[in-house]
Image (cartoon, rainbow, N blue to C red; front, side, top):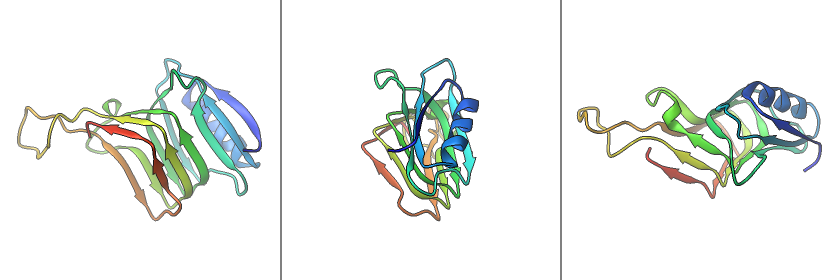
Length: 151
């Protein structure tokens, strides 16, 4: 991994760090577990050469994300993070949305939502879970070593 290391404490800093590292040879973004619940939505992010690694500043206390959406992006890895589908509108949003992107990796992370059974829309006792993810028109997408529950 080449490039700088940047530590962030909120979604705005995260977005700015992605922009900064996208214009060079990549680097590492260490995400603090603050009171912030993170969200990242980017168009044409990622360096042409190198990679951006987005990971927990403290692996024992990872930050929580509600959504990561990448469009026409490349060369990014998300590792060791929490994704909480209970924080989003389960019927319309995805915790992870990758569209028209290349070489995106999501690894060693935890995805959780609120489903308590099969949801067909007719049983009021069953909660619908969120949507863990959607990948379309992308290549080199890797989803590995993750734990997914209650979707």
